[in-house]
Length: 96
Image (tube, rainbow, N blue to C red):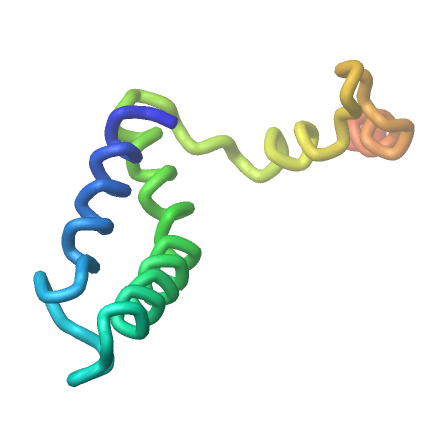
């Protein structure tokens, strides 16, 4: 995890702490409020962490990979060898 993601996570935690931005549910006991805010944190993190990570990679100088490179990476097995399907696709593309 890079520094930007650590800052994003900390800021999200502070903002979603009960009583800072909002308190859900109104008039609930401490445990209910804590559980609801924990669920809200989890949902917000789930839907925003990929976007924040991509942004952090752009800030650190990494460029987005194009679709072909991304697909090649997906077709490479754990030992670093490309699958047969990926090699055939690459060969067909080179013939064009």
